[in-house]
Image (tube, rainbow, N blue to C red; front, side, top):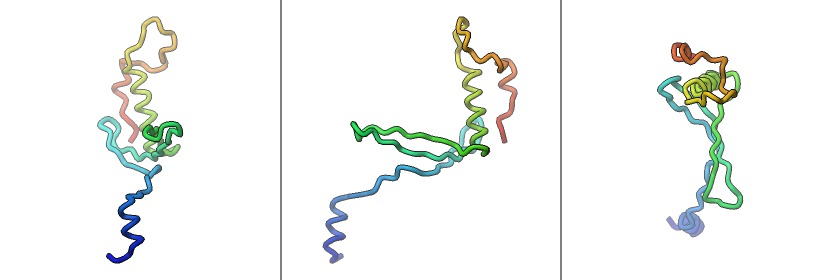
Length: 101
């Protein structure tokens, strides 16, 4: 190629980083999750980033994430002396609940 600008741009390797997007994942318990993601940069340390994953409200993915959150609450080891344990979910029957379709 004879375009001098192209050679300079190519050599500089200036590639725009993608900071947002949508990704579909498969979770073994709830199945398909379509999630939006956004990368947040740390101003004081550009080598560190925080990636936030969210599901749009009122979508199957949102319901499936809520189910996973309840699953973690039920199946996490709890301190018997901790009065903040979620007592509204019966750990003996929670495993029988089917994940949202």
